Image (cartoon, rainbow, N blue to C red; front, side, top):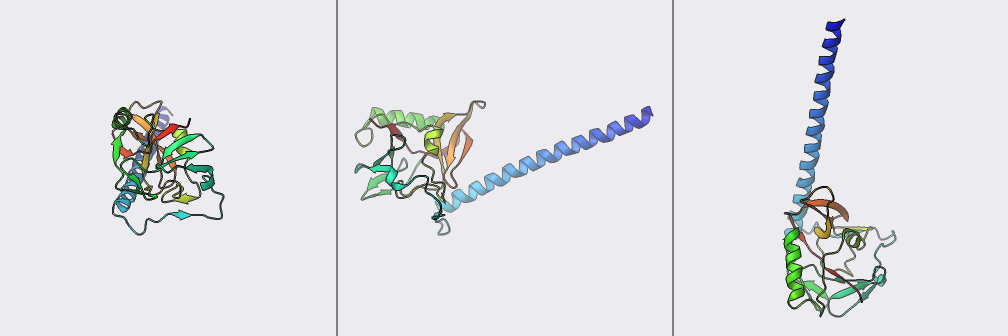
Length: 206
């Protein structure tokens, strides 16, 4: 009996080991697949692919209706729901003739903080010098849930790419992690602070 139990235990141990290995393989494969999709999305955007057109379910109720926002002539817009004033353009782009022109730039998370400090210490933007990264909750507030590619109201935030945008919210458990919203589909992810993503700045409306 002892030999039978020992043999059974070895079989169970091998089975558990196989299951753990399979789980690791599955997890690794899922991670690889996610980053492959992310790379493809970024590549298509950078190439200006005609396949990358915004898709909206217009029969659904808008989560960020245009009338919720007060438009200013200086390239900023105030959300009357949250009382926050946003830059309409991604950092690196400029407001000209009612649209965002030039190219959006990307920053690592810590470099984003340094850039914002320099901006506020220097000329500021639209006459204000109190710009900051939005919190994760604030950034999620401008996601347009009935649209993808990008998941944002393009009447309010024109020329927004379906890319990741940093928030100011660090991850509680991972010291090298911070949260971002990926505007391809409007989902939130924890990213490594050494990754470079786009920025959209905000300030508290007076």
